[in-house]
Amino acid sequence: MTKLLHSLRFQLTLVTLLVFGLIQAAGFMVLLTLRERDVRADFDEWLRADASRMLEQVLRQPMETLVPSPTGSIPQMSPFHFRGYYFQLRRADGTTLVKSANLEDTDLPWSEAAQRARESDTPVLETIAGEGLKSVSGAVGDVRLLTVFGRTPSGEALSLQLGARLDRVNLAVAGPRRLLLALFPLSLVVVAIGSWFMAGRALRPIDEITGAVRRLTVDRLGQRLGLPVPKGDLAQMVVSLNEMLDRIEKGFRSQERFVAEVSHELRTPISVLLGEAQLLGRAARTVEEYDRFVASVEVEMRRLGQTVESLLLLARANAGFPIALPGGVSLNDVVAEAVRRCSAVAAHWEIDLVPRLLLPSADEPEPMVRGDEELLCAMLTNLILNAIRHSPVGQPVTIELTAEGDRSHITVRDAGPGVPPESVGKLFQPFTSLRQEADPAPGTGLGLAIVKSIAELHGGSVAVRNVPAGGCEFAVTLPTMPADPASPKRSSGLAGG
Image (cartoon, rainbow, N blue to C red; front, side, top):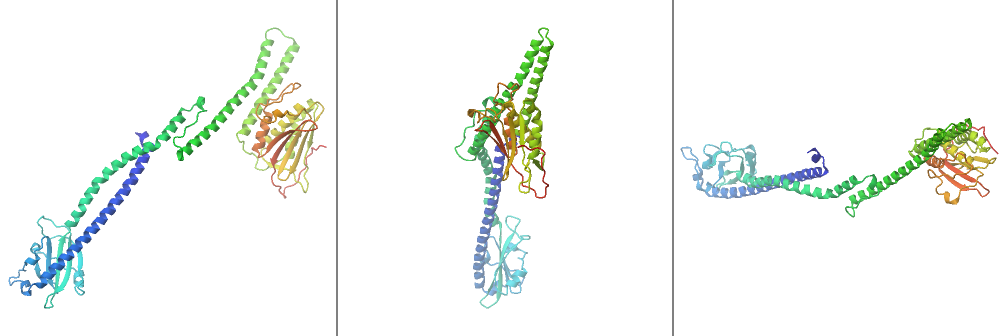
């Protein structure tokens, strides 16, 4: 029952029923009001016509016949025997000359409005209570009372009061009222049934879409929803859902591929360590063999740690890592820190790191970017390590910082073999690595992907090109913060020629 009450079909039916009921009730009230107004207008017109005819007959009668008898009784003349009326004939002073038999001892009210209208001979219409009046049917309700004025041939002023029960008006209105009251619930039932089926028909495409979505599983992510209607809001909704499914499938497949490649990268050093450990444990080994095993464990563990750290950085960047520092970050400091982190590796491979910083001046302030200093250092560190890995022994790696307008550029150049043309397009994809035979610790293929993600996270970009004279050049472009004239200028202790 609760499910039915909360269903869209029931709510649409209920809203339709309420709106229709209110409109119909208002329409019925307007119809009854107009009907009663028209009936009352016809009734008043009819009352005026009969009063005029009665007054005309009264004025034709000799005055002697209208004078009360010596006993005080008021005569009842045949011209006044109009069935269903109460009438009373008065002199100008309000005394009664003649009245209808159904009034008996009761007089029709002589209101102040009628007395004032006597002066202008204007007819007066009033509605009075029927208390004290008699009728064949018993109780008398409201009475419509018309007072008209006239004069006899001798010039005496007379007032004729003619009253008629409003039962006729009530009966004329009661019939349509009973009919409308009977039609109201019947029409609501019909509308409720019709609305229920129409709502079900209108919502059937939504039910089909809901069923299709429920049937979607991981194995069916490639399926798409069909269009229940060629155009309209539902068609647009289906198109939006299909576009969402495209994004979900793309992300899911990317995650599947990412997890598979990560598993492969993590499985390799673990398999190497496990194999060497099993081989080492089969027989007694020399101290040199144990030393080689320890060295191999160190190499593989370093590679495993580098892989895990790179994966964490990549996930952090792809997740939209928030900018931690509200202020700016000095690119000179970023270059200096990245060179410091890579100096030991460069010294081991006899590679010279040549930083070329952008020293501030009056015309060219120190380049600052809004971002996360740690992520920017990790980005540049990956580029420098990549250059070290591909540079021949004894060759320099240049890290140059330049500025142009509202953009800053960090360029890392090596003297290695360069990037094969067929690998340029996929170089920044995860797990793409240009392995070198002489490299005892090849990369994980995640470094350049991290570089691209961090650069884009800071509103920048990264590009690669082969240098004609030999080697490869990676250029990171970042948006520079507007210079603050009040900020002091700083210079770095690192510079290269």
